[in-house]
View 1 (cartoon, rainbow, N blue to C red):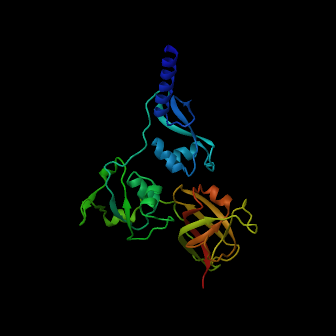
View 2 (cartoon, rainbow, N blue to C red):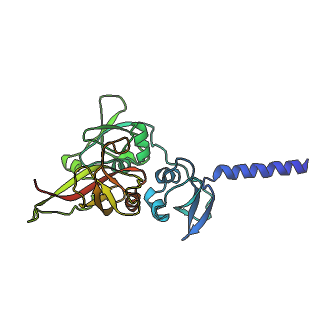
View 3 (cartoon, one colour):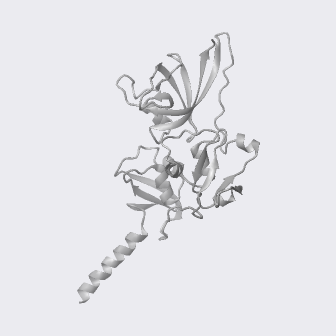
Length: 285
């Protein structure tokens, strides 16, 4: 009886430990804080992992040098929890369970809105059945605010328990995070003028497009044009050379530029389709 009782106690202890650990693989000491070793599961992204441990996705990306996530690999998640603490990290949950309607303003994108309401891009896209990252001015999004988002200024709308954030005209024109300053390309004796575009980029693998070089396809830019590409989600910038044009198909639908995989990795793209701004010079008509 003592033997069976001992076995039962051991199994119960292991069960309790398993319930308290969400660290996946283990924990290391990093400057006195816990560095969680997380084994990547199917469909996990840096954003979903960050939400599990309540850690900024950008912090995890920088810790792991923005490696591509694959099922089964182990990544490191830095935390501010003291090393040796047995406290359980709870996933981030909505503060009050309500869903609000938010009207998209000028120069706003998903990452900015997610940070404003302490939620994630994936949660907004899932809640609004969005397949891409494109937003239009005046578009209404359903938002599930996270903890700490109650400080946002709101007014009660016509429907019960639906609130709409208010903003002044000046605030609507100024994003939470200023985009990198765009270079000015004045009209010169060469007859060039600046073109600015904002939309979705997609990277593809094609035998006619060297995926290791900084190349791109564009609908109208002349072959040989050098284009500045900015990823507003990571603030990363690079330059690509236009080597051809592309036609719209299932892959390139609603995109403004097609780039190589090397370009996407340098920009820190987390998905195959992502939001960008591009700047280049075009000959005057």
